[in-house]
Image (tube, rainbow, N blue to C red; front, side, top):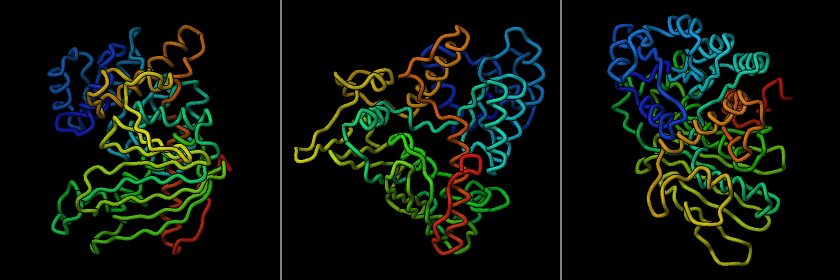
Length: 378
């Protein structure tokens, strides 16, 4: 692991998720931008002294020289460093799981896709919410035709945790709305791309064009804290997306609804054990996580018996479980289990970055429809 040090929000979720199934062992780390703090914290977590590194370059050199070098590197550093670190480790022959956003620009994203392909290495991006069992069951239901042709997908990721204008100078909040540190987008790049990726993951379709209305409801912010995005997908599906950080009363706020010719589905991350399914002209049904006769994708992603909650670290664990299967399949020169071949790829990270740029462009142009595809996929 690179980053994810003491006090990190995301580091513990990765360490819990990666070790949950006993498929990965946390073996090496460069956990802090302060070398001594990183070495010390790594050893507190059980890393050997010679594998608790001061920075990512030292770790790259040290692990590259070992016969028992790590199989997978998780990049959980600040956004602006993702490209440089991911690129270096892919070129050195390591598999990488990078936190989102994968890069800060579309050009960087295209470079990562090409480097991963040329070096035949896995580059995954942590859209971890796709690890939830019932999200995977939604995808399976859509793929097997239970809903018929998909007409409309509606996705939300709206919370109210940045609604206090008095937080304008809080450094943990301020940087997110500063173009010098966050890039061209704030709320959409932070949360909206999770909802957009979820829409693509569940429907099996990619976004082709979009129109965005973006606003800074707190006037001191240079970047948006609320966005409404209309989009079109390559399978003909119409998309609607709302993301906000000023929606007081909303806590996490990730949800998705999918409407097809033969039925509709609804799921919320805050109530992840229930999937609401309404077949056309029938009664509403509640599908429970862990019940019998679900899809292989859902069964594989379920560990706890029905009626008990499975949360975000277990969703992350499913991404790691997918990656372990992919790495093992490569070593054993066999096909990957189809029910496990669901981890988000570098291409997903690239498409997300292209959508971020498209939202910023459309918003600045008063909602003009713009191409949301990266150049290499046009």
